[in-house]
Length: 603
Image (tube, rainbow, N blue to C red; front, top):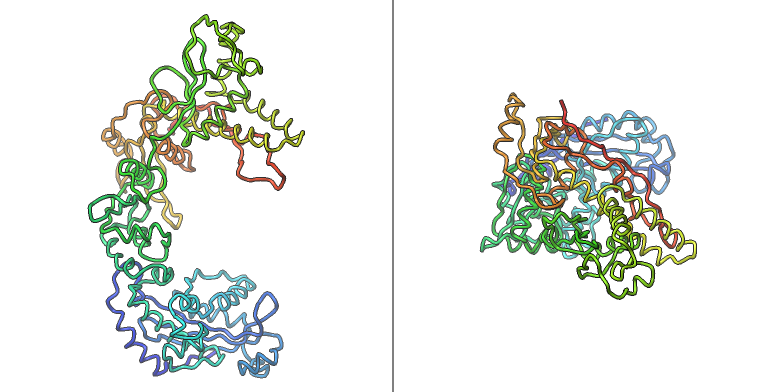
């Protein structure tokens, strides 16, 4: 192995780099990073096919200055094909006394440690290096990789170069080194191509590694120039609001790192056409720092519901929901309603669409023959029976065909299916599906399958939401983890009637009991909502439930009883999105998991 001197051409690259000294500090400035530009010569196109490495060449650069070079021939322990020898000039006799890859690879990895790996057509070179690293049982370093060929395809036009081959790019960028299929010379040429690409992209506002890695010509220069809008935001969890020149909210989002996330809107990390249009209109970005990621998610939902930004697709209209209601009257019935009233009736939902609510309603009517007429009936009705009664699908209280005791028993079964145990509905519709499938009436069976899915999901959702909603207060804590998985401080949340009332992180060295007590005193006062609905939107309460049910969460205190029925709908949930290869997926609902009867606080 040998180390060669820096060429005069590489010295001239330093002056070129000086034109990029005004980089801003968003991300990691390119001038501060060390790049290891590598090139390989091999005996073939794939290591999996038995090809080996015959030469490794690399140049380490930072800020336009060459820090060192690495070059070695490698004995591939196989014959070098004649056409490869002619192409590269490397013959069998030249590599006979060269070190094997078992010795060359560790030396190269030591040379490249801590640098960003760069190669022209990086999947080829990095693929060979990783293959032999794994073959030796050697852990592959977590290199960040730049591919100059891929980057050039986004930057270089046909007017600049006929193609993106290394030789064409070296000529286009005026490299004094001509690629000649020898590893070190090709690596030196790639250095000049890298600097040429950086110089060109610097004029487009690409000044950091993150921007370079994600650069796309689809992101306009005007869009990139707005990256300063992220400068005042913290590296902390929170909510961000894009506003236009009239202070109207265009878009609301959330992130564990506000500054990094907002910055991505001005690079190729964000290429959705709607977002590009939104960024073009935006004139400022407001950030709201939050104590925890859960608080940020909840604030996002509330702000979207309040401002209804036109570039947010979801959660803008939480009020547009439907419920299935079991009425309280002499002859109860099921109906679709838009609001939950404090009328002692039983409700199932909410449903985000009327279509889904109607499927659930149909599943219940398929199982329980309660009346479907909408008018109120007196205790002793005397009317003509409807078509459903003649078909045997209604008990027909309207003409006295059923007494109030029998009808009340059916209603009790219906109420029990809604609130506690959905087995009657599941068994009835599963039986109907099986019979239809046996007769090869698959489309009809599919209708019943969708109805059953809508019912079970709605029942499970209602039972889980209601369980938390009934509790005047739940206090829970969980140790937060950083991106590396290291455990840090404790997050604490106060939940009242299903609504997030307070959030905080216990400071290092603080007394946990005192901090939690203070947080509870400062928490929002929340009044219960009527019926089973939470004092927040269902979407907010579901986010809270996911956090409460996540591994490592501990209950500090529970005011009331947080209980869910063990035989409830959750155990019947089945993944219906996985469609079988057959004409119809008719997987019956099976036990998936039970819910703990009582959630006890940690002691």
